[in-house]
Image (cartoon, rainbow, N blue to C red):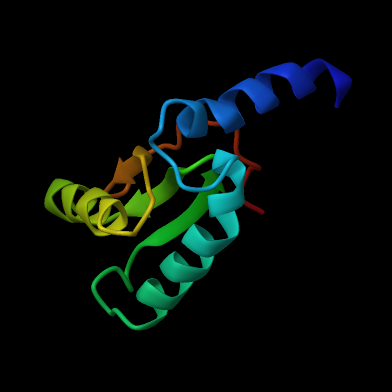
Amino acid sequence: MKQQAHSRIERGTSCWLAGQCAKPNAYLYDADIAADLRSRFAHSRRFSDASLWLTVQRRFVYVEGCIRSRRAAAGMEAFIKRTPNVQLVVANLIVGAGKPNYPAMPAQ
């Protein structure tokens, strides 16, 4: 925690110091962004066949998992970018059936 404190403070306040955020810390947006995304995904069937997880941190949204097509992946990024206060979307998606680019437990 002590090792990360400086970089978290610097990253968290830099958008406010630059006049790009109304809140004094970018991390203060995370709960609202996550709640908005949760609601938007719950009311949309557009990505119901995808297996995804999202991480929201400092106005960045990291979306990972599996999605059916490249077109759907591009649509996913656009869908998330339309969320208020999202600064950046980082997509790490597997299109179609493929091998994950991270260690996975063997099938049992």
